[in-house]
Image (tube, rainbow, N blue to C red; front, side, top):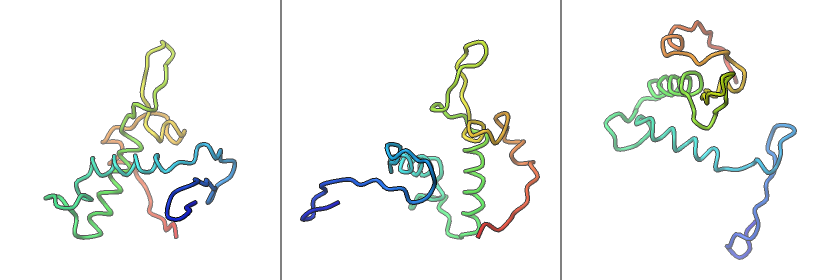
Length: 119
């Protein structure tokens, strides 16, 4: 909320979803995700040699990037201790219970999938 052009109060509200703790609502999570994506991916950074001018190639590359990010890449923030008390790192898909092990890039590229419309 702004008063005379100055920020006076931050109001957090749920746009969609259920049973969300308002203390967990923050733009910092998505901003961190956006920064990581821009740093890892020169196709979305302007003034680089790899900048995508065509939407189709950008869409395909971003699909591959996010699939790799979620299924193959270990994240240090998703750590846990295994049975022998050794610290291990998960990928987001494994942490969410979508897969039972971290995929290799070969598994990702050879996985049979079917495109469906989501809109």
